[in-house]
Image 1 (cartoon, rainbow, N blue to C red):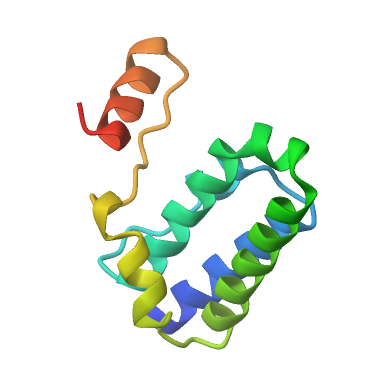
Image 2 (cartoon, rainbow, N blue to C red; image 1 turned 135 degrees about the vertical axis):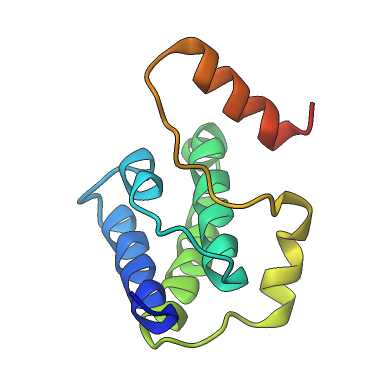
Length: 119
């Protein structure tokens, strides 16, 4: 797939998460390998969405704002457009690519976790 097709695909994955058709873990396992910063940003936004699960249950305004934010990202990608620079810049500290080795053993999960918290 080319960049535009990858963006459209990722945008649809995000919508599928927001509409509870798939969970975050299934969505991120399907992300294409890429160096496209817009797709990498979307990946990290989904990872944070999953990490904020407890906060989302306690704070309805936060949940609604996060859902709108992800929907904006999804709609931009579905149109094949770059995400705005300010959104991409928010996730720069997390850019280390997209993880694809989601094995079910504890060691793999721990190693992936450490990669994201910078240990």
